[in-house]
Length: 187
Image (tube, rainbow, N blue to C red; front, top):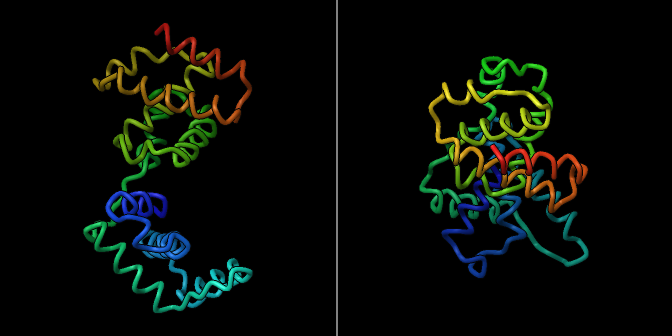
């Protein structure tokens, strides 16, 4: 949620108008509220001051609360976020891939390091992660994917973006990424 709030805010407002050192933690504050894991503004202000103490950066509670209102306005007060996790367990079970839950969950976690969640619907991201997991585990799920009646070209594009991310950040071994990319390219 914090990443989404920051991304949406930066798309609507110029970062020259607002200090990113205040926007980022305020997005965390707002995300914690939206996810019902409230963090006190006072505590957040304390950590911001501690983090930027060498720069003599001043941040008061009123600054956080004012920035919160600017972010809310930029988001049109829309704080509902649908996560790929919602359907993931059910889809994995339906696909007969309960043994790949940890791998798929990790893939979904890593998609938050990309901008996929801003571009694609959460259910397609979940399906792409299942698709990547099935390729990495050499599990044949073509019939199951066909039953879903989703745009498999889009699922494959998302899957390739995920694998490209891993390849560019060397997060999994080159052989596994290359093998998975080759399999996806020929399917």
